[in-house]
Amino acid sequence: MTQQPFTRRGAIDLSGLSRQASPPPGAGAGPVTPNGGSAGGGAPGLGAYAVEVTAQTLQDVAEASMTAPVLLVVYAGSRSPESATYAQDVAALVEQYEGRFLAGLVDLDTSPEVGQALQIQQVPVLLVLLDGRPVTQPIPGVVPSDELQTLLQQLGQQLTAQGVTGRHQPQSHAGPAAEGDEEPAGDPRYAAAEDALARDDIDTAVAEYQKLVDANPADHGAAAGLAMAKVIQRAYAADPAAAHAAADAAPADVEAQTLAADVDLVDGRVEEAFGRLIELVRVTADKERDKAREHLIGLFAAVGNDDPRVLAARRNLASALF
Image (cartoon, rainbow, N blue to C red; front, top):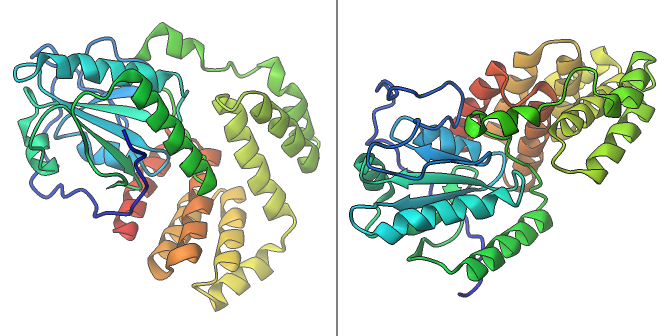
């Protein structure tokens, strides 16, 4: 299989799906919550980084690709039994990357409207989504595991080269193992960083969180702590009144707007910080737009990806981008 280069393509057309439809029984809250398993014998036993995709959750899964890539696997056991096995194999492989990718499994036997929205002609087929858009040509058929591993390694390298380093949070359906990954409030690993924050020694806090992230990039608690400590570090170095004055004078200035957003966040004006950068995304383009978006993603991490304000802002960001 040849390497799949990233090419920016059109956003997924979801106009044919009803966003007002009620979720199926068993659906939970959150951006990429699975539908509890398909009646048609879909892919059971989802891991921490896989979700089943329905008409009600396709938009949310596309928005999840704003953080990190989603591997969308479309299958139908009634038409191709091996396609259902393939979907499970992709989900299992994604687990090895600890959030670098999210597997979105689309069962056409139970969600045919999703296949129509994606214009799927055969099963199985693999789509790679980033920023809500397909970034490779659709990959049809069952890809051998070794070739699929190579593909993910290549995609990961390209993402890193492009500065895309976000990771998905573990999904809530992963059961006791996933719950055990959540760090208790008094986790001793974070003690040095938390003590430094309590002393307003922000530089030390950043350094301590950075050590934890370097040692374990999948440590979501440390990553969130590092993101917030960096926001505080930038905001504390600024004069709030001057930062806001500069931002008011230059609505499209990325440096001015991102600093004002940091100040807003530290002052507790979370929605204002998000709104400021979403508007910046609307009025900028190319590298400037990328900088604005990346800074906003960093603020999302600082607040917490499960926070309702972050979930709402992600939807607004998707609208601003498209």
